[in-house]
Amino acid sequence: MKITMKVYLAILTGIMLILASGCTNKSQEQKSEQEKIAKVNFDIIQAKSLKVGQILGIGYPGNDFALYVATDDGLKMYNGSEWYETTTNQHDYFGFQAISAGFIASGQPQKGSGLKDPLGVIQSVDKGQTLKKISFYDQSLFHFVGASFSGKGLYVINEEPNGKLGQGVNYSLDNGATWKKSALKDFNSDSFGMIAVHPKNGNIIAMSTRSGIFYSTDNGNTMKQITDPFMVTALTFSGDSILFSSVENEKVLLKTINPATGEQKNIAFPFLDYDNPITYLAINPRDPNQIAFTTYKNDVYESIDGGMKWNNPLQNGKTELK
Image (cartoon, rainbow, N blue to C red):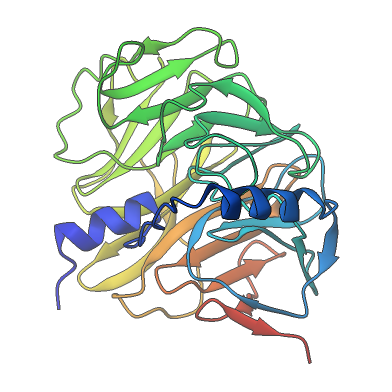
């Protein structure tokens, strides 16, 4: 079985088919639901069990000491031994990006929360308790968001042109106040993919595509292909190098690449069937030995020793406390 374009797009966006919730015409029911959610105080509690239907992103925010997993049921946090979740604000955080001050994302709000849909680009500095509206609130949903850990570079892929953003890659160097369209010179792939941004230099990005990794030092205005044309499903920066996963000859691989020299090294990790490729990668900028990845079938793996040993705290989207 080959991975089709349809499956590949699902991998790159980190989403499978979402069944849209039908809108009710009963305003009283909507009001009651909003009041119910409003009465729930925001808290982060230990999760007795988890059942995740969809993983939308992962990362290590600089204001916490846990791996954050953005799901279709809000944020889940793993501290190396236990899972935690929020009691409310269970939004769909598409394009989730961990930064030093917290996280940036796009997405759709929890039904009944009172927030408008879509969220545009939002930021939280208090573990999801409150959201700051950065750009395009109630206007756009971005499945692809990239952000530098330093907070000095912000990118979105706009799937449909509008009055403020051109179609394709757009970037902001002032936290969303103004935006420019990337020229993408020498970008010759037939697909866009997830954008990884250098943790310190927001001008440097890398993009995963069906045709390999494309790299830019000028905000995506000029792009350079730095790998052979194989399928890359996920990537993230590890300092100046890039950690990425590819599917080659029906095998799922995990590698690093030095963009300056093109040198690649294989990273050992648990075996994955090639129809269960890696969908998201994260490295803790404060501790590069702490690595995590998710898979198409909603597995979560984490290593705290640079990939020597791996823990598997979420399997097929499920876990239960013993």
